[in-house]
Length: 248
Image (cartoon, rainbow, N blue to C red; front, side):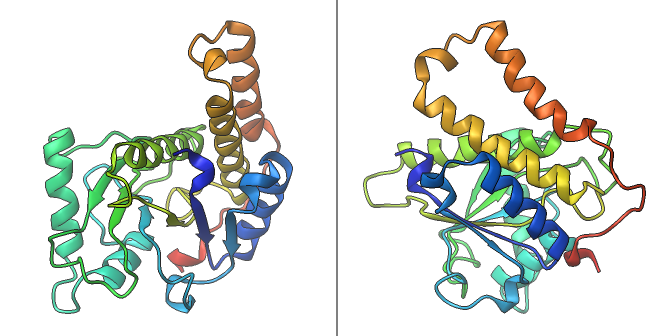
């Protein structure tokens, strides 16, 4: 089961972010995959079925697994019992300790199952949180120039590996919901987020289509991929800071 068997809903209330992402996806992602990525200019609470139901939601987390601010707080409010909003953080931190001894480095992805927890029977029918830290603690991360690309690559890799190891028809992930990564307190611009997200999809699809090349990459090819990503942050950017709508 490869990437093209997954569907993605990428939402954000920021029009500038969804426009930048749409443009980048249209430019870089093949139609066969592009048709499986929906870009939605809404908040999570505004979604209706079938988009409000998904198997996995992506947390643009901090390395310590505290889901108590920005979109992480949105996740906690959406999935945890109303009288126990901290349940998601406890579940995530337990998994992080088992996997990383409590600290997941930025750019990694950790799958957090909700089965057999107090958050299992949530209204979104969500079975997994993909914890993808964009930063150690809430802070500006524009210095980490390829963090979005690294996060999205790790996410796609974790999702495909999960489905490859899952029993047939059981626990497989089909629909994934995510929002901007590092675009709130991290100050990643809509353009950088859009381009690096699209390139991660493009390159990951290429790796699936050409295993012989990617399992023995030569410097010529590696340099070409690297230059493509580097171009996303070498372009002039507006000096004005901005916040994703989830931070307002």
